[in-house]
Image (cartoon, rainbow, N blue to C red):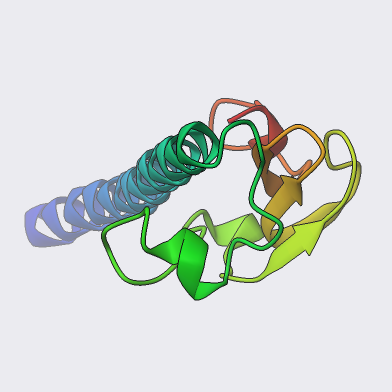
Length: 126
């Protein structure tokens, strides 16, 4: 009976640890996404400064990617919005989608999703 109680406790602890592990992984993906968006924003600002007030037309073109110093556009890593594609539009995204959302009229970049992260904030607020 004692062994069964110990195995039961061990099973409960394993379950709790597995749930925490999944949450930790998702928070790490969200932190990577925040870092990636900061990198892209820096590249956009450098482009704007070098081009005397002109925002990039395309974030996937070779001319813009030279400003990132990493060779390619980093992907969104957060699970519900993961992707590398760029959608062009105006303003802030209003749907749950994937990848990046770029407003070339203002040079603003967003995560292309209104899904919420582990803290309940929409990805589009990053």
